[in-house]
Length: 253
Ligand SMILES: C[S@@+](CC[C@H](N)C(=O)[O-])C[C@H]1O[C@@H](n2cnc3c(N)ncnc32)[C@H](O)[C@@H]1O
Image (cartoon, rainbow, N blue to C red):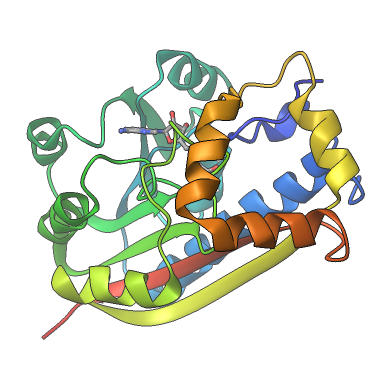
């Protein structure tokens, strides 16, 4: 079985185990897609064909979940996951294509959507404001966006994949700067046992390169309160806290 990765491959994971990291990741990642699908379904009801983009779709399982609410185009940067998604999740209502969320010419060329779903992407893109601005432009009249990203500190371990950590307050400012109102929100919080985490991170098939020690040292020198937080989590806190914030957004005005 593959080691911990930023991506979820439900077909290859130990979905039942709630005691290990894969079980937790399976639950957390699929839940946020289910929430997104429910919000989109509730927003559009049975109004006919709803065109959805699942941007940074990863292995494609989430596009399949979203297809309950409409026809889904899954897009990801990584040719290998797009191949995997095509093989495993292509269907009547799902299709996949390679593309970069930093390439606005490419994104604009995809046309307009009734729903833009972007889970675990905003923390990866070069410019979060320019990206939210594309989402705004990409919506058909009456359209909605669903975005989700971490609500906790990740920049000590997730560099170079993550470009930023966003607080709940920062998220609201990001949305209003780019013309969005929050219609619904959903927060997930979970704690990962330190021993399970170390086992998974040191797994030979681990896909997340752990940053070099010098990165950790310079990060904690500039963010000493995060060093204290991690020391507490590793001891009395009983595990590392992960959290996500998910929002249904509508254009304001
Ligand atoms: C944490 S995974 C999330 C996948 C999926 N949305 C989910 O929630 O399970 C992040 C995904 O973003 C993709 N990604 C990162 N930067 C990207 C970019 N600039 N354009 C498109 N995809 C990107 C990665 O290849 C990866 O599959």
